[in-house]
Image (cartoon, rainbow, N blue to C red; front, side):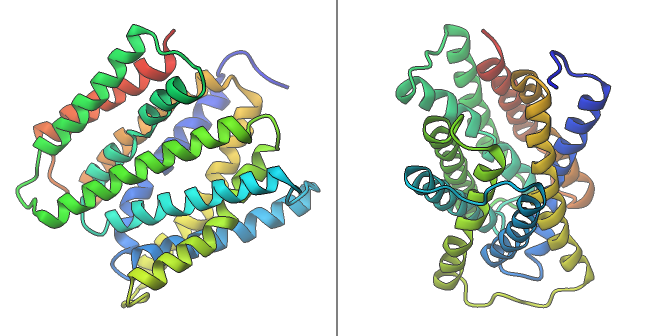
Length: 293
């Protein structure tokens, strides 16, 4: 039964989810010390896919569709795989605090794409949010840490590409999948069809998959696969079913906030004025662009 407001239970759940999503970027930096990044993402998708398949079997939900919906699921999975290939590879070079801000340019890609391709017109206030987000991107680039180098620039660019691919994935789901298939099927298509994409990317780009992982790296991989990629998104889909999605989504701007916080606490990354300015501008832009009339 749906609620028309976010109660304490819903608020606690979405708060925990955004904390998990924010901490995931620091977890990626940890696994990069023991595994190659795209290979890590490949293993993550394999584990989460198996858990998703088991879940569908338990609740007796069909695993796949036939015809056009299956094709759309395949496209979503390919886009999802490319997104995470760029995201994980980029984090080999750039700071997690920068990555979590740059990747959250995706909501603005969605807003602009919906305006251009889905007929969802943007009000002047929403255009202001897009400008604010672009200003945040500029601030992040100008707020370079003292150790900034050309490799970090490459990492930043890869994260921006990941944000655009994420936005494209969301737009594709909105146009071809939303309302036509169960959300868990969309989720499962993303995971399952991303597996061969990530495997091929890893084969062509990475020469050494396993470096010298320790207990911390294996624990981080398990966290990303089971807690983040499977459980947190499963709970998210449940929340979408039980609560108004617009009110839920407004909390997602907390993810980059927690991402920067964990980067400072656990990765000891440098916080610059530009990084903080970019963080607030991107978070403000997310709110204005997506959650105002």
